[in-house]
Image (cartoon, rainbow, N blue to C red; front, side):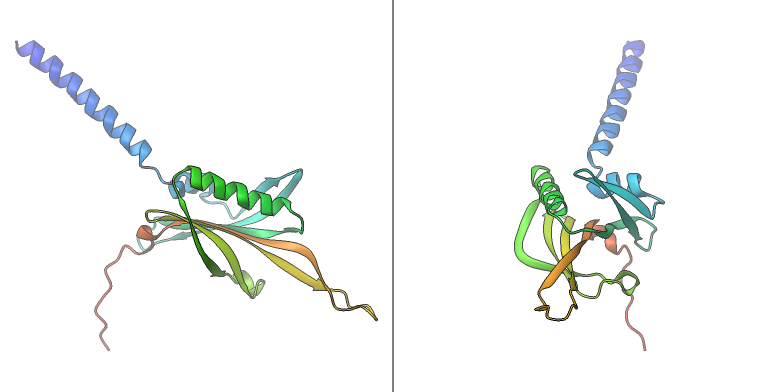
Length: 178
């Protein structure tokens, strides 16, 4: 009888450990998955159509040293490939249970004072997790004599962000004392 109890306890212990590992794997967020991919990197390559596009990577950490946001951004020749990529990324998020917010969103991103204006982004949200994808046309005007000043778009600036608002701040705000 004692032997059966020990075997039962052993089996129960193994089942509990298996369930713990399974639930831990399921609880991994998009942010965790991407962090394991981009941890320690400042650049990456994006394959769009037949092209390779170099992109910069920024990982933001909260006060406890945990990632709360990952941004991938850069510039590429103006064409429809990046727009298709943004649509594909959005469709993937919707299939993963995110909902697309319909009101317009803008990101004020001025890394190294290169990009001065706001970037219009599509925003997807699932609980506290979110994803932002946007493209901004970079305008270059032809300054030839007699030119009408019609804008010519030569490049697209792209901005992709994945984050979790629950991770942004892990500290309790201190009472203001002056």
